Length: 345
Image 1 (tube, rainbow, N blue to C red):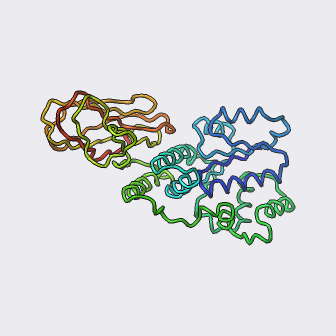
Image 2: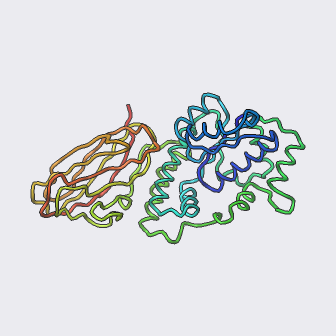
Image 3: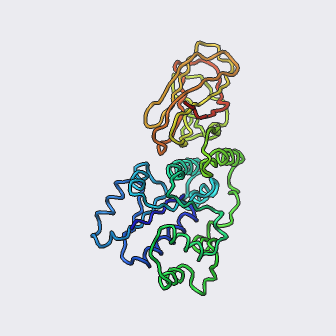
């Protein structure tokens, strides 16, 4: 029997995985626990044990690759899917893995796009923070019933005793998650975030929230503050780029992730005092160059262009790379916005 549990890297995701593992251990005894993101990792675990441990396989992944979706779909196994809010995932991975702001945001978009493969499957039981108020016993019973696992009263009592000993005072799912992950509960937005970071987080949370809720995502404005000033290694955009100098890349990023499909990036830039015959190039890169354009910069004012491309691997980050195609003796360039929208038909 296969007990599959996929979920965001968050307190609720990992707590649910622990509950599923407790269920499998009490009901089936000897079992194979696999934590894997791709088929190669899955196969390594599978071949590491004998046949007697494969009678029950408990599979967990917090960032499943596309081929994992195909594997589970082929065997028609039920999947418990945990998806928390964008900000909750961001805060958990930032604190637990000591990630910088941009790195944590990028990983959060990757996880949400990866889990999005499974959200529309008919064999998925969706778990969210809305389930926190359930009693732990009813939550466990709902998982046992969903998997169709043969569980008698004695086994169920043993499961509950392992999860919530009498002296623990654990009654609800929230109580259990709080007991297992006390360091990540009840935290507001991190006070260490700058105003630009808070704005970027709110902007992306609203856009990617459609994927989490199951409504999809048709458009998103990528925060300008998350693009990199390529003239200054490691620096984010916080002022106009001085064009004086040789041909070179000037703006790259933001290395966020998108769901698979056809997209259009609408870019707007502003130039000042660009009196020479300066050429600019731009491309979309995700594992390879997906599309590219080139154009002459105007002397001043705002200038816009569109880039159409297709995302075939949502686990690969997407970036726009803007470069000065010719050397410049004057001028400044600012990125005003980069808006993405789905292309239909």
